[in-house]
Length: 121
Image (cartoon, rainbow, N blue to C red):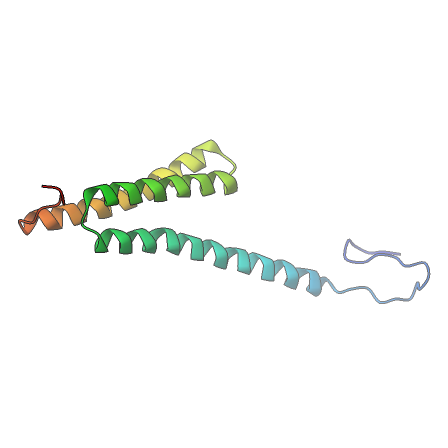
């Protein structure tokens, strides 16, 4: 007689030992762990990659293009994983605020040094 979802009764071998509940918990824990690691890696990439690009390039159009592309990609990924429109909107706006603060800091830094931000001027 099966005692839970981890155990299936086998008529051919009724004395077959049940698979332990620990095995199912371990599998779930490993899957949850790697899901969190993947999410952390994607989150880090979405913050670190634009920062490097924005720090190394001093062209306004590159800054706006990188910010627009990263925010759009983040919004699309958020819409795949989040269920509520409110959550997608909130997460995308928070990410946009972080990126735009960094763009503003770089613009202010260049302006305080007396440098030209626009390459074409």
